Image (cartoon, rainbow, N blue to C red; front, side, top):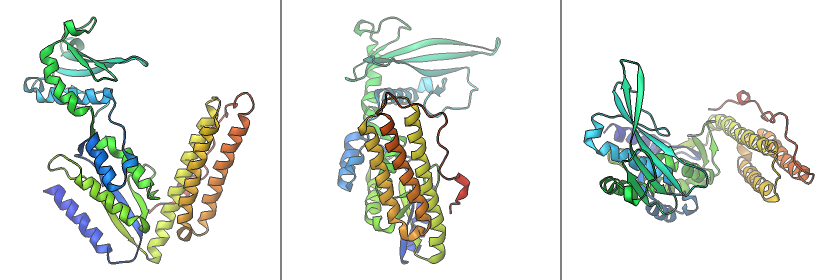
Length: 358
């Protein structure tokens, strides 16, 4: 009920600006609660016209970890006595228990398999020490998804050592999570879609964006996409687009925020180019060409904000021109044996504190 009230309030704020001429929208979203399979998401993105943003399914390593976590939680006798702690997921800070289950991965680059081990950690308060025992190991073939479980603590994992009961219990979870997206998987997809709307980030860390009014139809399609894909009950993912009125004072503050956002993009691209020069690797025409395409897109986006930015547009153009020239210089230098590493990364084009945001 509380979440529903918040969303209703946001809808009310959106409605309050809908009757005014708008210069654009302040956009943010929440994806918590999304649970959607790769095929279903692909179909939804195609219907919404965003099919090129379909992300790859979770890696076998991520999918099996999630399946293991869900399986452990579902086993009531384990859940009463053990706490699940994961390396790559959020950790439970409550360490009052005497025993907990740790999920550990054994992986090697180039190997066809990886191994997950469920390790029981016992806390001995009398000697202030820890002891460990391997309770289960799972061998996963990275390409085929074939899985073998064993309760043997060590040794070769093969069909003869397989624990069929554990495999039968775990298989449905593995089948579910191997192509299932959750909220954190879709963040990059959302940023890509929003960036395709010529958006500018209003926060250096992202999360809040300005989208021009000309992209209203795309925003509506994005909102409908998030509203229609499967989700957990009582959690309400949403996309909120608050209209920015076309008024003098509003546009003045917005111009400063948009300018700062564009400068942040330029500084980020400049850092990327600096790392490329420091790598010492031989550069290919394709590598620099990809950068130049990115700079061209940024230039086109900046031109869209020409009326809003006014004289500040000159600084943005200069920054992009410098990026283009540095990229060409790197390629020219690579015609000699190797690019000599830059002793220091280039300083940001503009200081972060030089421009305030709204």
